[in-house]
Amino acid sequence: MKTVAAILLTAAPGLAQQTCGDIKQLYKDNKCCGSPSKTIEGMGGGGSCWTPAEPLLQGVMPSLNGRPKLIMGVDIDYPPYAYIKMAPFGSNTDLDNPVGVGVDMIKAMGEHCGFDVEVMQAHWSDCWGDGEIGRGLLEGWYHGCMTYTHAAGVRNRYLEFTNSWARLNKPSGIITKLDGGVPVLKGTDTLSGKTIVDVTGWAPTADTLFFVKNGCTDGKYTNFTVVQGDEITLPTDGSYPASMAKGPNDRALLAVLNGLADGMWVYGDQAANYHCKDGEVMEGWSCDLWNKFGTDFAYAQSGMFGWMHNGTTVAIAKKGSGIAAMLDGCLDSFMQTSKFLDTCKIMHGEPAHNQLKTCIPNEFFKEDPDYKADDITKEPYMFSTKAMADGGHSCKTGYCTCSE
Image (cartoon, rainbow, N blue to C red; front, side, top):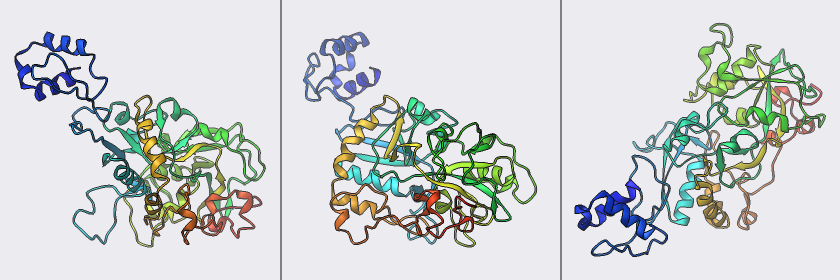
């Protein structure tokens, strides 16, 4: 109420001599706001009742022109969805803002639906932490965070998710160490008695391992123990020292490579997304570590979708905030347009690729000559482990077969 009263005072200087009691009574008499065009009685010259166009954030000037203004947070270690540009640069502004599919999507939605958006760098842990909502979303540092997959389980008790612009595009997988080319975890393993490390703060969350099926046997996993990667003490020497870790995915992988866990519960495409060119250095993960894919570690299981309610969403927000409902109407409309196709075709990542096969297709996609079905040669992570042998894969390519 203090915020509304302050804005009314600013808009109507004639009220400056009135008391706080007068303002409270004015608010009560008019039951502000109801309708943006409602005339307020008792303001001398009259006026309009101001209604915020977006949920208010502390320390942020709200929109005063009726056009919503959103502030969204992303971290920068999740290409192609959220990252920063790498050299060579075309402008001295190239590092001023996060880039990626998530940024493209919400910016294009804003143009389509008539809202403004600022995308700021944030820590993933301030959006979602170790099994609970992050401080940034809880305390309203920003309206929402972006590029989250709608997982089943614990996140739904804290968060609301927008609809997804992507089909079920984020399969999960289980990474294991290769010992002389042989996987520590076999494709047929039930995980009984095994220790699985979860990437702290990232999907798929630990509880969703119960919802997927073994891609070789179609059986559920049972009697396993899950530990958080950030809670494991890594060795300071040896072939895989703690100093190699730049982020939570690195720490979880190092736990597996050091024999502190049998497997790593992770996105099925994480190894592909974290692949680096020779000599390349990335800010959010260790290229030296992830380039050992297919030699030191591989996926024992891939192509598991049972952990998901939906694909990659536009945003998550604090449960009950109304952000999801606010964005969903726009998303539904935007996804029927040719501009949605154009947005999905923007190239990101290394090697550069678009989201043409990831986005939920509309009538414009089917007319595009570049639109093709999934290819196990190029996107093995989209396929079950039982398909890897016929698809030409093995532990040497990073995707083990059921018989290895």
